[in-house]
Image (cartoon, rainbow, N blue to C red; front, side, top):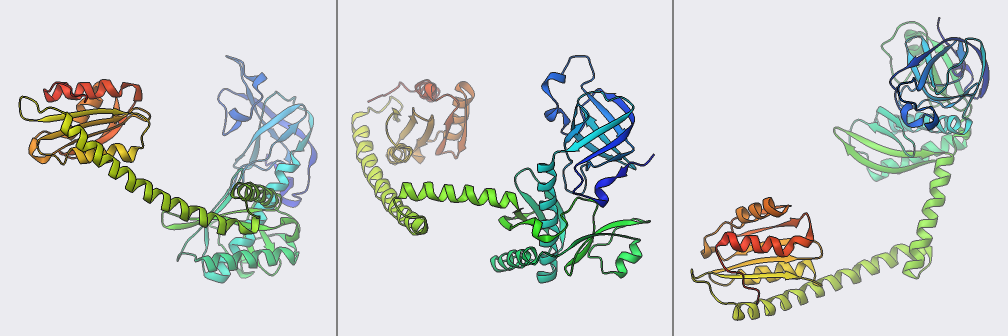
Length: 421
């Protein structure tokens, strides 16, 4: 028996009664029901969830990019809703008797989905009409919604123009109408997207904007969508993904954004209106400081390297090995020190930084060893990841506390006695 889908005619229906046609236990959770099921129902060796089919329902099943509804059937929680051919299957966390049952949908979730889905129709219609960018995919996420557009890259101007036009349609409070017809009838009426199906199809018309085949839940007028806000844009394979939110989500994110701006302004000791200019000033000052600090580190590293070269004896094989585990200095200093040491004839630098486990193995070209192979062998012994070339290799230890052990192993593999200087 086909399930009567009340939401097709009335997306605002919240409560209903129906006959329970079947209630069967399932051994394996379906969809995202496992995460949503009441923890009290998880019993080893017993069915945790049940599949319930009704003669009619207001519960929307996952379909067309829109997630399923949740709510209650009698005392049972509806944790998933599936579209299986002509039936709507309700996955619940308690058995339901084969009798009449009352149901209620989680209205806050339902209305949120209606706002997002109707907003998507408006936004997709605008992109198609203004810029010949058809929507090839829609996803209604828990926080953000996305549409994937196909065609040329939307510029910032195209995105802004689309957002303004979409919100103008919202302000005009146009009617959102459910229509039915055959593919031929809908095509003659100007449907935006054809569907390879026969028989009667359901479509959503936004008055004066578009006619689109759709089985989802929608608002009655565009004003109920609330503000449509674009939140992001990126390339996804051959398409362009636009992130957006509508209605209460847009309102909530606006409050979050403002709170964040106020917090940043407070840290920058400026007003919200001055945040951008203050941030630009801080970044500019930071860049100057970093350049100065980098230059100072390089000069200090060069001086310290010369001192190390002067105080470290040359080995019996004519190679000087300088080994250091540094603490309390920057990674840039450590790398500069190793580089300066390795400029000296017949010299190897085996350097580490204890705070983060950075390791640098460098040599003068005339030493003739393989620093990359030495690093790989050392990391194989003490744990770590990295790589490089024959004369210069670097990486990070899995355990920074083993820095001295790593360098000692490297020294032994070089066949030299450790010089700590």
